Amino acid sequence: MTKKTIEDITALAKRRGFIYPSSEIYGGFVGIYDYGPYGVELANNIKAAWWKAMVQMEDNIVGLDSSIFTRPEVWVASGHVGGFSDPMVECKECNTRSRADHLIEEAGGFADEKMTPEEINKVFDEYRKKIKCPNCGKQNFAEVKNFNLLTKSNLGNFNDDWSKDPTYLRGETCQGIYINYKNVLDTTRVKVPFGIAQIGKAFRNEIAPRQYIFRKREFEQMEMQMFVTPENEMSIYETWREKRMQYYLDLGFKKENLKWHEHENLVFYAKAAWDIEYNFPFGFKELEGVHARGDYDLTQHMKHSGAKLTYKEEGGEEFTPHIVETSVGVDRTFLAAMTEFYDKDELGGEERTVLRFPYRLAPVKAAVFPLLKNKPELVKKAREVYDMLKGEIRTEFDDSGNIGKRYRRQDEIGTPYCVTIDFDTLEDGMVTVRERDSGEQKRVAIEELSAAVSK
Ligand code: GAP
Image (cartoon, rainbow, N blue to C red):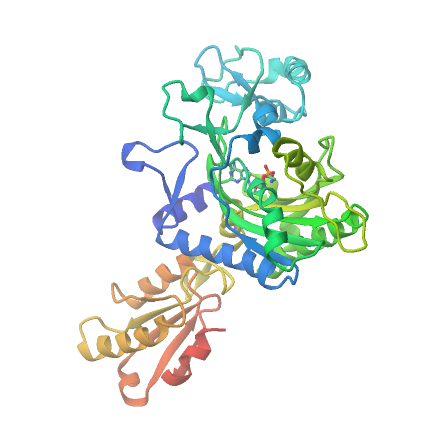
């Protein structure tokens, strides 16, 4: 098996138009990345696969697209204004700010963002001698402080001192779900237990965004919140743990690259919290969180808004629904997919890099080539075939370079099928279909092509 380094994946992603550093012509922008022509296709396919599994295939889950901005009170009620922070430590020599818990972890200790500043300072002191600044390598640190991760804005506030009364870009998408729970309940036919699923951007002022697109400041989440009875919370939670792990296996991820990790420190209201970890090039790290959150979320929004968010069926008792949450990043799934399906092998005596994406994730499903670029009759026929396919599947036309080069280019972006139009095609109406992983080629009639490459 190919050893997959983050450098290989980053280089391929840049070279082939998957991911660009944001504002690159200005020197880049820390923690922000742009998806290029193939990246946006892969990200869209990831979102479509999640939406299909979570909304289309589930009888009791509906979709939502709530706004990035909400009333600021939402983030007070959710606890983000008061407590959504990471422990930050500043190097007194070069002023670089780092995540204190990450530095402690790298030095062999344990700390996390749920510890109080006193607790984390105590652990930091224990490991101080082993901790070096990631930028300058010196060991002269200030005290660890908590830094709030919410991103502030002046939306709707025209005063100079707006930062005292800011609006926030959402730090997670699920708050938009909680505040629309009653709307969905009143306007659709859902009954508890039911879920609301949403895909959308979230923003966090991460102290030290790192590991490429793993930890970004602007990222996208795919979250589902299931509203359940207190009695059913844990059994529904277990069902979702199983479903979410199976989802990755069904997508083609290998079992040995996925594992469960239980949270060491549960927040006071949570009943259970497990993460699905993926074997990224830098080790097993969180891909998705599956949480049983009790009635905390709706209770908080009832308290702060005054709205009644309880649930009652005819003849039944009134209660506040509990929440089972599944939450995963588009970007983390993207990086996991690039890692999982990245491979190097030898085909026809030549080394190649190939992204072995499953069909539904592949940015381009088929590429159509005329054998020779300077033969108008071949180009014309190839264009006809391309026009026929492009209405059905994402198809590319490519006539530049020799056929070998065109194959390599498509292998590197993970295109499952390449279709070549040659002189025989003009006689017999058959084209050569070459399969990405095996390199196997077969002749297929043009009228059967669509079915052959849609599998
Ligand atoms: N609503 C729960 C919630 O937001 P979280 O563990 O903070 O929980 C859920 O985030 C998922 O969102 C993570 O498992 C990860 O996939 C993704 N995520 C979180 N922070 C991220 C960041 N800075 N960059 C990229 N993805 C991130």
